[in-house]
Amino acid sequence: MPEPTAAEPTATEPTAALVLDSLRRRMRALHSLYEDAVATMDLDQVNHFERAGVLPIAFSLFHIVNMMDASFLLMTGVPPIWDENWERRVRPAIPDHGKHRTVEDMVHQRIGDYGAFQEYMAAVFARTERWLAGLPAADLGRVVVARPFPEQIATTYSARVAGPQGVTLLDAAECWIYQHGLRHLGEIELARGLVGLGGMTS
Image (cartoon, rainbow, N blue to C red):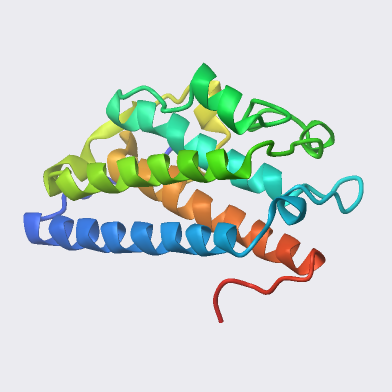
């Protein structure tokens, strides 16, 4: 695939402010859907194993929250919240978001302490929303991963979205958190049907 050649667009300040306001509202809406999903499932439903090749809800939940947490480092330079203390509290069967592991590995993911996981999720969501609330609109165009991309970025959706200069802060927030979150929410909605629960939106 040829490298993009178009010039990087420069947004006006009013346009950037509008985009940032939309991103803040969409992120809160996404988080609220996860909060509703978690509040309407119990641990047996979250850890339910349907059959080989079908990932449990536990995988989708832990993966997306832990990836949101890890992505924060590249976007802001702030280390993840996840540490040995959270691992002892949440007790995931596999203490890994599993991005580079196989489905065969990750079908074994389970959450040990559901209440502790919800606390971890709330901490990750709250930090993201605080960051967005204080983010200057002008920062959205800052390049966080420049071309040529390292291997771990080159195969991602964000690499397909990126402009000529690389992955901007807006690209990262949209791809790594918001759009990634929607993707896994869809998995969770499908898996909820397997345990007798409904979807999250009409």
